[in-house]
Structure formats: structure tokens, C-alpha cells
Length: 129
Image 1 (tube, rainbow, N blue to C red):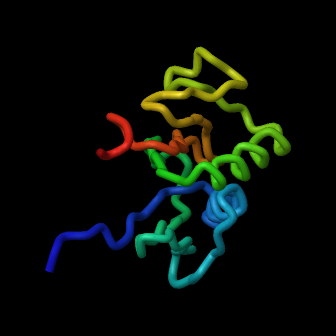
Image 2 (cartoon, rainbow, N blue to C red):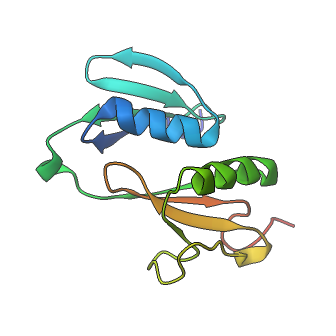
């Protein structure tokens, strides 16, 4: 059996708020709830399990998602319509813009718990040959 990521836990102040923010932005659905977790399934079988913990225990992380051009168009429209602050770069020096790195498009923004989220249409290093 090959090694695959099955799930990861994302800490949140409010697990429902964070799960719904993410699912709504990318047109996904909340698929399960158990114990302290609210899960959102990704298309490759990985689940993001949002768990509420005290805000002072949240360590901001970076999560990058490879999506199609069409998914990017839809997500970016939701970002703009929702008035979500976004940037073309991870240092947040280019507000209100996207990047065209590696021949694709990308955008950075924060989720409700303060995690840095990134959407890209081409993996780093460009499209595979």
C-alpha cells in the first residue's frame, strides 16, 4: 500500500464557522460530525477535520490547495463578493490581487481562525511535462 494522507485536524475557535467558511468558499460540503470534529472531504479522499480549541492554543498554519481554473474562478468570485481580504503574495504586500506564478493563478487569504490559506491552479514548479 502506498502512503497517503487520510485526514488532518485544523484547530479553530469555532469548528462550525471554520468548516462552513472553507466548504462554502470551495463549493464543498460538510460530510461528517463526530466528537469535537466537523469534517470536509476533499476530492482526493483527504478530510479536513475542524476542531474547536481555545483561541490562545491555536498555532496559525498554512494550507495550500491545488484547484482547477474553474474552481479558482468560482472561489475567487466568492472571495471578492464576501469582501474577504486577499493577497497575491504570502507576505500580504499585494492586497486585492492574485498572482500568476508558475503559469497559473494563486491567491492568499486568512480563515476565521487565523490560518493562512492559499489557492493555486498550478503546482509550484509548473505543470508536469
